[in-house]
Image 1 (cartoon, rainbow, N blue to C red):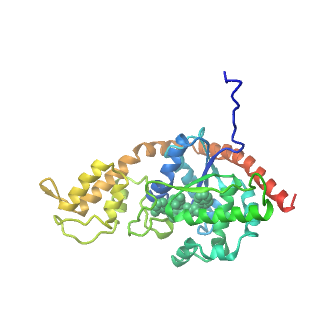
Image 2 (cartoon, helix red, strand yellow; image 1 turned 120 degrees about the vertical axis):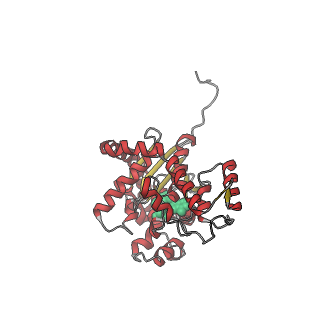
Image 3 (spheres, rainbow, N blue to C red; image 1 turned 180 degrees about the vertical axis):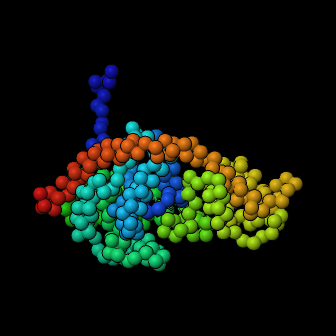
Length: 345
Ligand code: ADP
Ligand code: TRP
């Protein structure tokens, strides 16, 4: 029985985690260690709600094939469920199932200066990588801000490359609140904070940031020959077998680090520095074998769960739809409040 003399203080708005991932290709180790692993942990640790979504509107900036997009969306959903998303603890929905997000995007755009968007590093990086400079690509951070602000999110778990986008979101929330709710007791839109994982920057096989846009990724669920081939593509120097391997800036070592606790890592570092494991020489071939074994072992259970969901697409769809219903109810509340504040309702 609650003590009648103790007043329960209720937070009028619950704390909320939110993050999105683009269905623009096969999910990779960078996505997993930078984002998905902390998404999975937060659903058990966070004392509020967790909202995760598949950013299909964002993916249109790079994917031009309807079938590929549909299949990528399904693949991201499978990956989340395989990696342990518990539909009773967290939502998983398609961004485009909540069309309110595009409406809020427009409202935010009207209070956002060009200069803010012109400073976006990811636009420059993507344009340099050869992605079409569409106005959608330029506008990408406004849509991302709408994703976050629409659900009054308080924490956004992402990799390092997304920090600037979350900071831009904070600015957009402030502009909007100042324009339409200055001095109000409760802000119209809550300012979110980002949260980094323990591995906020995972290098790709070529040493640049691992990214679907750069074609330098390692997938989570490859096995056998396919995995061997993927790991074989990790770029190394030409140190001869048996010679010491430099650890700093070493792609294979940096990837091994993701999978090892301190003790095991110290042991592996010893092999690299000696160029030997016990009496045997230790070179890049051995290091890559070790990496392939780690990947295979780490995702073994997830691979099994993935097979289950692959065979039951209706279960995946049910999770997406149930989640969208809940998310949309909150989206409508925020959007209506914003529209009223602007004089649109
Ligand atoms: P990509 O760059 O491959 O298109 P996304 O932009 O869809 O990946 O990123 C989805 C999530 O994964 C984001 O939170 C992002 O910060 C994180 N992420 C992507 N690449 C990496 C990486 N190499 N290291 C750490 N986190 C990453
Ligand atoms: N821009 C993010 C990325 O490329 C994906 C994303 C879209 C996102 N909307 C978001 C991440 C909202 C966090 C919150 O990784």
